[in-house]
Length: 340
Image (cartoon, rainbow, N blue to C red):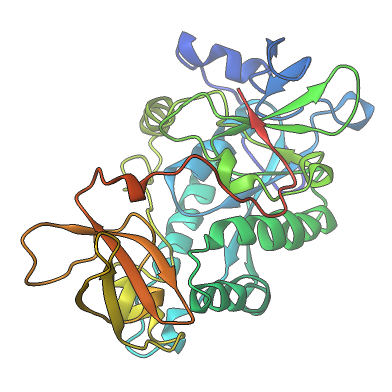
């Protein structure tokens, strides 16, 4: 295989993975959007498989995504994104980016493909992190992964991958894409593994971007992915899956957010009787449904609301209090919706 490299021989897989090797895991799904629900689209210009850039994270999911695409006949190369450098922080060393990059290098070497290191720290700070901290200061609980996927991974990275010669960008997300037979924009579907579905994190990505995207793991379970990695002898086969936010790492979130958002102590107020139960460390450290951690009370209290103007955190006793539940929600701008 020429260009970015990759071993041309396809070694046998177990029968359970045969459908993945045949193409992209496409399966007729008449209940969803009247089209083919799949991990991506195998048809590229001039009937060729084409070149795919795989976003390598240093984990087992992106490793197997690259493996599968290579086995399907695509010309594959890896791209590693550096979005954060904890060495600039006080204490440093909280993010695992250096180790993840090393693991990505080892996987790409094993597969015989090139790996490119791309720096998006500036874009991440201005397009993701600043908004993240601003919303926390407003009493909200934003998820930076949604903004990262929208502005960095499936915008800046996608554009760079295409400039580097790729026809498509692939990632290790557990999600599927659907091209309606009747035409129209590509639709985002949930991955078949209900415990690992990541379509929520992709909801703000535009359908136009998905035209150039592949999700090789959309029709697999996490167990399938682990088994594939073990059978191939990938260094990431047993690596623990990442959880939480990379730039926070394993440190206490309150310690982290206090470095960027002013934390003002204020009252914990119980919604039953409006009584004052104690003092919180700062509104940004709490989110709805979280155990408040109030000392000196006979039972656990949970956060049910916040008032930024009064710097008040409202709490309720017990995990089944009616104030913890709701029958409606307010949504902002959503660019995609997931279906079965």
